[in-house]
Length: 531
Image 1 (cartoon, one colour):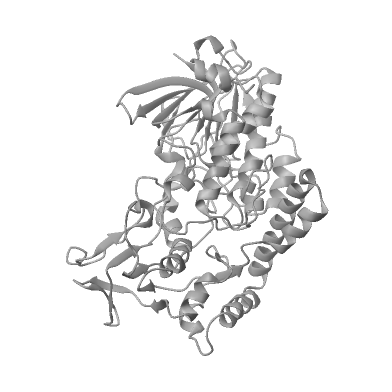
Image 2 (image 1 turned 90 degrees about the vertical axis):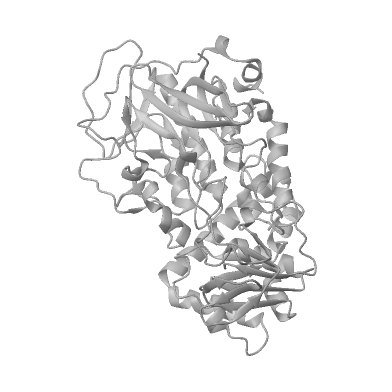
């Protein structure tokens, strides 16, 4: 059976970053990337709705090892997709990707110190089995096969077209059409001004308002830094400037929510016609950063409202009718097309079923270690980015930490690394600290975070840089063990994520097993990490 030192799950933004990190920092390691779909890019290949763009600046969303060089700080989806694919091609990572490989289960054996992985091939229906020493999930945290749609009444009566942005039809004609977009999150506020350029009229129907901030699509500070510094310095400098600016804004908003609320709503009011009802349509009932702030480049949403191309209705859907949507207040919004921008359906680990020494793992009953590993689950890491800043900032730090753990295992002659929470530690909060509906609906499927570090997830790039980048990987809470050929060690304390009287015993150690002779040509060429 084929064996890899590292198996990366997902060929999106974080998966390509993880592969690059393994390739550069663990040149001894054999690896492959399993991608369930047929293309590189993850989110940026999946989402094809009009106007799709980044919801954070590209100087932090881009990779630290390959800084973003585009003109726009807020980039369109096509540019981001090209950036990811170019990164994979230039480093040879694209040759290590196996498409149509969806991992359905992974079983850890302490005796063998490896994962036994089962994947299904969607292109031919075959089942693929292999083993790996370390499993690195870069699947993001939402389902790719469908989005979330509430059970709206009367949809069967509607004579027009109903579309969810996650499944946008390739040839949907929107020019000259009357369009209702249901939702007020990042997807809705991206779609609405884009559709309004050619549609007869667009109505954004929202149940409640969202905090929206306007930023220039081209960053004047970035332009100045690039003129003043060479490329090798301007990338890191811009990354830190934007990371610290975002962190400062978040910290201020959490400490002074009333002041932050006034600032945000005042900015919106200055960009809308005099007398516009900002209190109803753009003043949320929650505090800033209880949910993610939404970004509009150059105030395009507000410009479309001012021009009369867009209307905002704050109400709830009562039912679909033959001609459109009727709200709870009794108003009927006539539409040819209704877009249900109603959110995502979250999925942890891409839906992979886990067992450790035969015991099923319930991720929702585990604690997360540094936001990247699961209590009681050996040799597994997940790349989950920030909710208050760029996704890639956190993923870059996690990739670095994983590589240092792998190198420590190899140098110490050990094969197993498992986080172990103190017995007194109890789950305090959900992993994703947002009140958004899509997060609350799925909270039970995700690990929890404890009250104190390293079981507490700090949404802070600076704090994580200090603890993930500058501190060592031999720390309390992270147990290394399992030297090859040795007998069983003492039992570790039980964990809530692993049903049964006790967790698996760490057994022996030795370098991570890598049998290059069992690998296919693709992995031999690139998976060995030497390009």
